[in-house]
Length: 69
Image 1 (cartoon, rainbow, N blue to C red):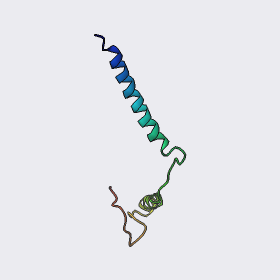
Image 2 (image 1 turned 90 degrees about the vertical axis):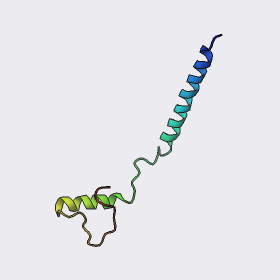
Image 3 (image 1 turned 60 degrees about the vertical axis):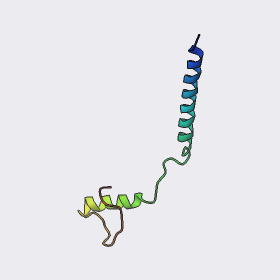
Image 4 (image 1 turned 180 degrees about the horizontal axis):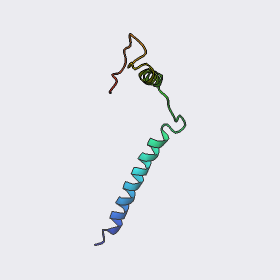
């Protein structure tokens, strides 16, 4: 009884399945890279304020994410 062809088919099936999943995942946002969200301006503003002014936020009334998220 030879089980080698079955193992080879199973291995190929697993490899092909993983490659298909990777290809779909990578091609999802292939042409929109890098994707900038609306949050990045706020993060840069907060970083600039921390470096230049020593405050966590340049705004007095800000409803934002906590500094350590």
